[in-house]
Length: 127
Image (cartoon, rainbow, N blue to C red; front, side, top):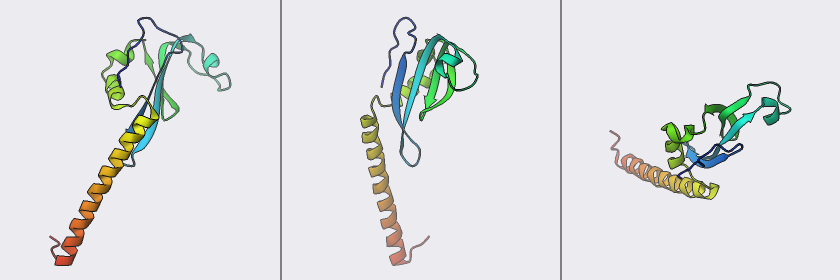
C-alpha cells in the first residue's frame, strides 16, 4: 500500500491500513489521524485532561490511541512509516487473503514436520 499526502495539512485527515502480525496471524487495524490544532477536550470531551494536538498525528494501533507524531510530513519522511504502509493492506479483505496464505503455509510446514517425526518414530531414527 502506498500513501500520498495532500500538499497542505488537512485537519482530520486519516490514513488507515490493515496488517497481518504475530505467530497467530492476527489481522490488526491501524490508523493515523491528523490534527492541525485541536484541544484535548475537543477530541476527547469525556476523557479527563491531556495535551492538546498542534500539528500532530494521533497513532492508533489495534484500535487504541498509542502515541503522536509531530508534523504533517512525518509519515512520508520517517522511514518507519513507509515500511508499515508497504507491508500493510488498504482493506481488511486484502489482509485476510494474506493471513490465509500464511496460515496455509504454516499448516503445510507443520504437516511436513509431523510426517518427518512419524517416519523417525517408525524407524527408530531419533537422532
